[in-house]
Length: 113
Image (cartoon, rainbow, N blue to C red; front, side, top):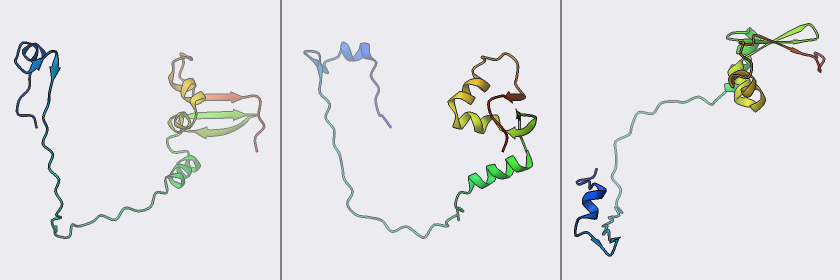
């Protein structure tokens, strides 16, 4: 931490400024030796399979908060995931352009597959 703080007004009226210049002296120490530490307990972190987890949520429709109607066929979705991946969805869902909270979006220019 800092041992002393100076307010600007105090610095400007002090003897530390010479011709509007402040010189700062720093001493830097470099440690070359290493210290042996006892073995720490490690925690096993499994590899990420977040894509699989998102897929499971979508398959189970858990937490889905929007539905796409494509030629009468319904597709559930998650607004947060869509907004995170698409600026267009982010704008549609969160920029207040539509005053009502859209639960269903009708898609007219695509066919379901």
